[in-house]
Image (cartoon, rainbow, N blue to C red):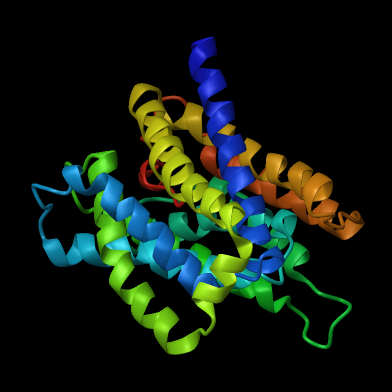
Length: 298
């Protein structure tokens, strides 16, 4: 990989990690209602990416469903979960999307899973469950991380369904994600949340900055760079580099939000990331994994 492209990949992973931290600060520190945050974010994405909306991919119902699942469906659950979950643990649990997508690809696309990848899936789930374990509460698994897991499952389903749609450009995909996400999120925030405008006004320019970072820098810039690198290099070269995302998130979580990183977290993180590497590292001559092209990214 060219040094410039490697630096771009590092930047992308750092931006994804920073977005997890920013999301935590928005919904927890600023106390912005999560569904309202998702609605405004995807409204900005839809508006900016509107010129790339047409021609509409077919069938339209599939791109609308994928757009909703990849956009507001997944992110609403993520924003709800990150209110109580730490960014570090959320980043590790989000890695479960890789084995979940692999399993869905097996069921929906008929892709094969060899023994090594199967063991990697088991290892990743073991590490993820260890991170989600909450020994200090009466409920054995963290409620916030269960929402993060639900968000991950939603994104994985969308990733596999996206594989069945041909010829969609990255910015066109972002346009449909925004379009499919705005109306459902507006309805949900109106129905289930209160005080949205007051909270946003109280947060002021900090909230505006977080919104622009989330919508423009992460959704449009970082994702477009990533898709460009996936098109330029083999997926089995790019996919392992995304491990930098949870590592950056753990470091930023400890430094910025004061995340606790004890022995249980360290062991679970290590097992999960080792399992992910076993899944994404392919033997020479193997086909690209279907899920790497449209992997759900934060």
